[in-house]
Length: 463
Image (cartoon, rainbow, N blue to C red):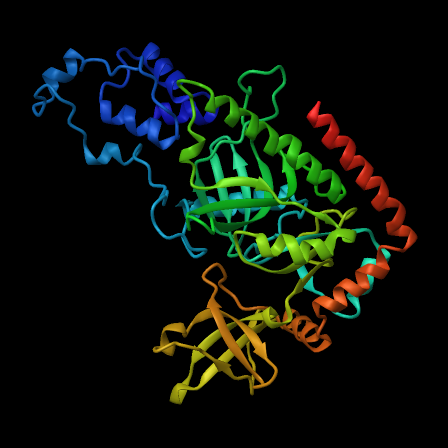
């Protein structure tokens, strides 16, 4: 436990922590399996010079079970053995549960920390809700926002939404239920004078989505966290900065230091940390000029190694807006527009769909839902189901269950999705609108400036 504390509180390696403990209390840790478990837990490679000391005389005399070998006890091993399930050879799914749950008595404090980093105050009455920014469905009305403000586009990955809180004690994935799960990953701060980073990030808050990439040739899967926003750096909120500045800071403060350290460790004979043992990799998500959306739709998305169900339009000058952001627009392929319902099987096996309205369940009278290739519909009862609309049959089709959500969509969200379905904004409509928009003075000049800035950055890196 003391070595754990030293690693986390002082941001030092396991080797340094073991040596520090041994210096303070000779001979230090004298059980080989404890030492091995510590290195495995923190994804560090054990140097050859780290040798387990002999069992001290006082332990030999007091331990009746000692026969010249370390005898671990179940109670003590539980503190150091890794709990994290790193699935390397199993089939990965978006429903996999990652990391270790945070005790319930710590949840409220951690949720408040997130609210403060997002400048949301204390949250008011009632339980604190997931504060992540949510886009709204694109319709004929809000499509006009693209003409009024400067937007970029990105693909809408069909993965699992997570915010991530990075502390010196570990990283926490935050799901839509506002539950925290701890994963052990390393996020060093920006290098100051080269060499080993002096400290790790502490209370840095990110937003992103977890996806599973699959190599089309080998069918090998890899879990990856695509980060698309940064809300706080080392306890300092940056939510009021325009998006393009937050996006640049994300690369400079979070991604680059991590990549630099990883590259240096790959060249080391005895690296003090093993990035390859982490439960998933990390990348900054890319954003595209509106003038390149046609290429994004027709070339980039078809070549992705994970599913995509549309586009997201991000205001380039927007602050981070918690919860529903009316200026953050999502467009889905028409056949993939969906609503999340609570499904229940009522009397006489009546199929009931519920939404939320003012915090209460609202039965959607007259709504029908179909479950294709499902033998036992009762297994879906009480679960959140994502459904797409079939306009020809005039009913909903269950696409999947949403284990990452505990409540259905709000009635207001349902109305917006139905409006989007009714407006039927196809890919052709999107491209036609954008082709007109990028000719507006608001876009024409700024697109050229952004292209030149990007070319300058690329040439500077090559030097």
